[in-house]
Image (tube, rainbow, N blue to C red):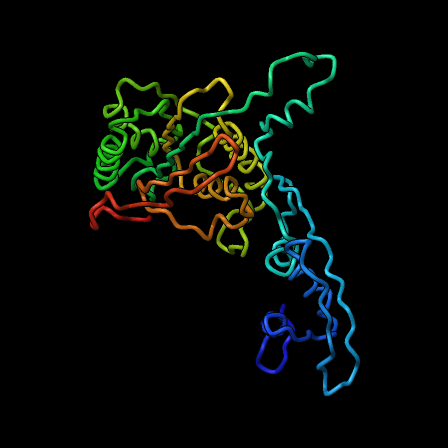
Length: 322
């Protein structure tokens, strides 16, 4: 992907040359290098002198193009070509401030003029933060064929109890606003200790959170499911993401905490989407049973990952992945 100058990559030579105030190669990699160093439009024009086979070609200016903006949508190409071209030397993807379609400016601009209040109050903005705690279910019987038979192992029950106790300790001063769980058997069983720990908190089940194939992984996995699973499961899991991941409403006055017990694929996909990382990267992440993944959504819509697959609450004998 990076052209070669002896044993040094073109990209490495380019960065060294710029740091030293020198020149770049004028070979066919010029356009790639221009894109590589065009992450910000204020970068100066770079001049290049050929270093190919002792050529004495005079320096030629390389116009640095403005950064390419690629709006993040769920409809990005699913083939691997996009992902090969996008990182580092490809398109520079900026943070989408209106990723949840709830930015106050966007809402006002998208409201038909006939429904706007001409003399209304100043534009209201969210003031509260939302914390979402994602918990993978406990270890379960993987040899069973049906979901009803895929029950937690004894170890899985221990993991669930230990995780509920840890969360009860962490949230002693801040009760969750809602507990949610997938309707698959292993998630329902994992959820039981949480109901006991937070008896006063509302809870509900959600079919959208069931395990599935969220997005074609990159690099591809030869052992994964056929494409039609991504087509059906992906739409459902994306719907779950849109339902639970968004900035607080303007009428929410205090910070909130929501706990979701679901599955590894779902959690990994949620993390990629929330951080605006290409969703095809989900399979590169590994999560242990009953691990904690925590994301904060600020009133501005900014998202931060506070913990990913945390197992610090589990003794070593209770840490399992399959």
